[in-house]
Length: 413
Image (cartoon, rainbow, N blue to C red; front, side):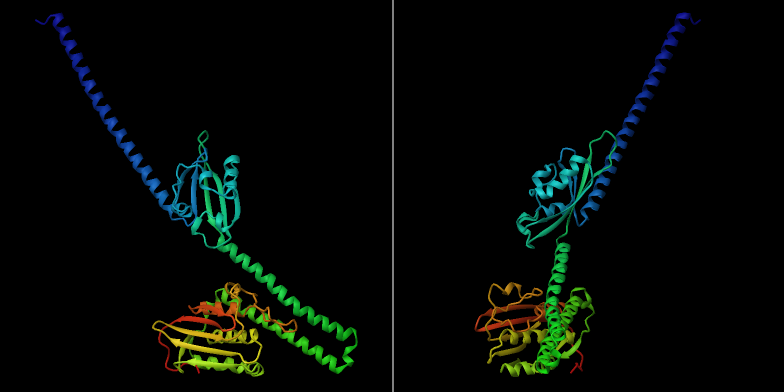
């Protein structure tokens, strides 16, 4: 017979057993929860790492420098372009002012950090002040600083993103365009003013009744009208070359000697009047080039005419030569004239640049575009041109032109 005390003991044992089962289940649930939490943390960390890696991949693919800056003005992220821009220096966790050594670069960014307002600022720097340091070789360089705060949850510290874009090429192109317009306007204004002045004299002073004076005035006006036409023609040619139309060159084989003959015919009267000697030196009289004959005629004409104009005294000798090398053609135009001063040599291919210290005031000036056209035309054909000059002995323009594919059997005559 089971007594009440026995029942109490059994009930206690059952309660203890139940508690043990419950404790076991709780422990197993706790372990499972801990495992789930650990797994969740691992997945979250892996997801964050993948997100950061994907972010870094995308930002490193940018061509512009990209920075993330915290509320203390310290850099927290810098992409590959930023490291390259600042010469591979350590950027992360460094203050902005330590990285942006020139205050003109830092001011726009610091203004955004202080006010929270988006800032876009274009900065022009000298070569010595460029963030590229010793790698900068372009002279004046231009940079766009674009800074703005990234939206963040309320109460969190603000983060500012910064994009630094190299605008030097655009700045130089715009400067060239402005200089071109200004110089072209100046060059056209002078002959137009002369023509208008002579017209006023003819019409207002009744000089039309004097045939000799009228003919003299009209002769001068014609010279300056021809100069205007030449300026406009040269401007159109160089505009086509610089606008990319050079990619549509009419490339076909032509005999180089026939091109030389054409320009000598055009300049025959000038050569005869100056008693100049033109010598053609070609090891291969049948040399055939691949290119646009129109532009090659322009090249030879401008170089030979330039030699004649710069040396108006009798007895000038001009040599037009060509020789074949293993992988290129070498073409040169040289003369034994007064030469080009060494200070002018680096600038002679610039548009509207002239070397004419020996000219008289009565002469009609050239357009100042001839050598610029020469350089652009040769570059459009994949070649390069260099110049050397020993005043009083020899001035030589050397063109190096890579050899192209084989020419056709019947080149243009």
